[in-house]
Image (cartoon, rainbow, N blue to C red; front, side):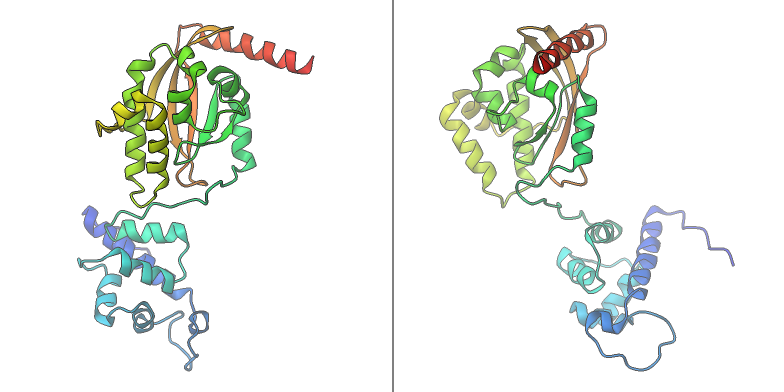
Length: 287
């Protein structure tokens, strides 16, 4: 017997997907899985709707309407209770939120989360082009050799925002520092707004305001910037003029982290200059 085609209406398709998703999550559990006694044989596998409702602390009729894909009001608290009852992992919980028409809560990684080796290899493979991974506070979590050489992200630099405003070396490198500064602050404020209960953003901004009048003035503007791409023009003491397009990509394995890739602008000689620079750096390191 062939499956029926999905509804044409997007809202109905979402509810239809929600109905099947909840049914399959319920069918994979037994009463013993949730600490309930087995009460005889069951005609169908899995928990009953009534059991899911009781364990989740919601009404049976409400849960039934939810699983039937009815158009009802839901809250994050109730969805979290259902997700716990059905033993959903983080990916399934996010899927439940989306199918229910809610924005999933932001996933969080542990402070100082270790960057997986495969991502370190991605950074290394990107060289001689600069690349790095930063966490939600813009702390540098992993840096390739080109980013360390070209951007000055060496052992003494631990945070992109602090480096931008407090490093004399970086300011000397950046050809359009004053023009880029408002965008940098606007993007950091946008990121901070995603974590309104996290005091670390305020602490970091307060520390920077005490040492950088430029940052203090820009922070007080309360402007935001949503860009994920930017053009970076640098003047390197050995390589000369370098012009990059930088792109930020989310890292699913590390919630709150971004992979930042620098790609040479075409027809600027940047790639050739980088290849010569990094070849000389590596030669000096092995010599």
